[in-house]
Structure formats: structure tokens, C-alpha cells
Amino acid sequence: MTESSRIEYKQAVTDSLEKEVVAFLNAHEGGTIYLGVNDKGETVGIQNADQVQLALKDRLKNNIRPSCFGLFEIVLEHADGKDILRINIASGSEKPYYIKHFGMAEKGCFIRVGSAAEPMPTAMIERLFSQRIRNTIGMMRSPRGDLTFKLLKLYYQEGGYELNPSFLTNLELKTPEGDLNYAAYLLADENGVSIKVAKYAGTTRVDLAENSEYGYCSLIKAVSRVLEKLEIENRTFAKITPRKRLERRMIDPTALREAVINAVIHNDYSNGAPPKVELFSDRVEITSMGGLPYGITQEDFFAGISAPRNKELMRVFRDLELVEHLGSGVPRILKAYDTDAFEIRENYVRVTFPYREGFTDTDGSDKSSDKSSDKILEMMKENPKISAKSMAETLQITPRAVEKQIAELKKLGLVIRIGERKGGHWEVLDHA
Image (tube, rainbow, N blue to C red):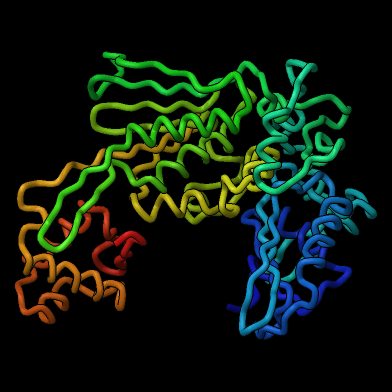
């Protein structure tokens, strides 16, 4: 990889690091900074990487305004036997971001232009400031001031962290005026918010069979209970064949988990509506209120461009390892489902997962078919762009027989097609 509008290499930590981070925060797509890599893309390494990692977190926390906590992550990686640090930076919703020491002026505000961080013109600073989103949960005052956080402290302890007396400030659970904010309200032991899980007898919302609410408690506990409920609902189909035991989940579990957590983190709580989950006889629908974050297109969304609507929640969920990495949720869903699974509207985003069917009597019964399927998967792994015709020639069977095998592999959730027949590629899923 070479340096670009989204990638910056730094051989060592320099005084200009904040400038680079600010430029990515102000950029439309965010970006990534690699520390310990020179301008040519060669790994040179970072000494005392763990200490540098902690120091960088403090620098970014103290030297950039508005707060960018929840909008960046620093990941220790190893390349060529050396330590490097990767800083992932999401596009922020409170632009313009600036270096605290210089203030909201051309000396403090930067924007990414090509592979360089350039001073932001005054006109752009004023325009971005006028568009700044102020109804974020960090700015919204909590409806209650008598909140407690025993569960939140317990979750952090279980994750190996100890929250000190200043945790409300450190986790940005207060408004600029010093009051508890709406993020604190959502994470408190008691609140008035619940995630609804409705189950219908048919394919419409006419026959409501079950209506459960998970909430009025810490959002982390509510999410855990929703995921437990869906784990029970997500049936596992099994079939014993002469060669192996076949298993198939009704819904891909990784995609289901990511969709729920994404809906919770990116929900627009300013209108008072929480996300909801609806189970039908043929599908599950997960809906988060609010459309895409400001400035994010559908193309950005599917590419995994990260612009968290609720950075305070993102910070906590990532601390507790409920979220893997910034912008990882949608790409993980797209490994198992097509973009058609998403319905994106101005006021909501909905993900629909159709249920997979159980095994038929013929599934796994043909040993020669099993062997051909295994070979097809191996060929797809070795050459994701391979055609059905080429596979048929190698296997010495007809292209129609290969297409039939591929259809079965798709039904089993073992492979998906990315893109069109021409120009696309196969992706063999991890559990294949």
C-alpha cells in the first residue's frame, strides 16, 4: 500500500501527529495512520509500543477538540518481526475538529487533501461549524440526575478495567455544562429505555404471538439479553451423513450479532425511539431509528466507512469488546448476506435476514457430490475469480452440475458471490 487520502505512514511519533488525526476526523471517510512504517511503506518498527500506545491516547484525548474519544482506536500489530501501531480514525460528526492549543482557526483545523494534511480555509471552518450536529447523546442532558452505575463498573471489572472516581468524565458521560448526559442515562442501572423484541405468527405484523421488552436497565445488559433471546430463536439444523455431521443455523450468528449491536450503537436516540427486533415466520428484521449519519452515503456505508452517531456508546462497547473494530460491523454482515439485506431510509435503517431452510433428504447423501463440493470450495479459495466452466473442466463434469453444487453451497451458507457474474468473485466463509 502507498500513502493516500485515507492512509498515512509515520516512521516515528512526531509533534505533527495531532494534525494528521484532526485532518482524518474532518475528512469525509476518516483514515488510518501507521506508526513504525516509513514513507516507502517499509516496516521499521516502534520501540516500547505499549508505552507509546498509552501516551498517544492521552495526547489525542487532551490535545484535540471536540473530544474524539470513541472515534479512534490504536491497535498493536506485528509485521516483519517488528511492532507497529495502527491508528484507525473515524469521520467525526462534530466537525470542525481542531488542535486545542491553536483553537478553531486555520492553524488548528486541518483537512486531508490527497496524501497530505492541509490547513482548513476559514470559510470551510465556518460552514462546518454551522452544520455541526448538536443533538448528540453527549450533548443531551439526562432526564434523571440520580443515576447509578453499578452494572457498568462490574462490566468493566470483568473486562480487566477498574473505573476510577472520575469515570463519568473520562467516559464522556457528562455534558459540557457538567450535567449527566443521555449516554450516561442509557448506560445507568435504571432508565426508561427498552429494546422491543416482537414475534409474529406469520409473515405480517397482524398476528402478534409474543412481545418482549429488554431494558429499563444498562444498555449493555439489555443488549446481552436480546442476543440471548435471539440465540434461542436461531435454530440449528443438523443432519448426520456417512462422511460428517452437517449443521446449519437458521440465521448466520455473526451477522445477527453485528446487526443488533450496530442498531443499538448507531440508533438516533434524540427522537426517543430505541431500536427494535421483529421475528416473523420467514425472517428477522432489525431496525434502528435515524437514517445514515450526516455526510455518509450508501456506498460509504457498505464500504465500512465509520462515522459513529453515538461515539460515547462506541467507546464503551469497544472497551468491553462488544465491538471488534471501527467500521467492522457492516463488512462482517456482508460476508454472509448481500446488500439487499439492508433497507436504508431517511428515518431508519433496517436489516432483514431470511431464514435458511432445514436439510432435505438428499443433503449430504451423495458421496461423490460431497467430494465435488469440497473440491469446488478449494478451487474457490485458491482462485476467487474462477468460473463455473473452469471448475467443470477440472472436475470433468458439466457446468450445469457445478452450478447445482454451488447453489447448494450457498444454501448451506458456505460460500457467497460478491459482485456480478462478470467481474465478481467467490468468498468462502470461515466456517466452510
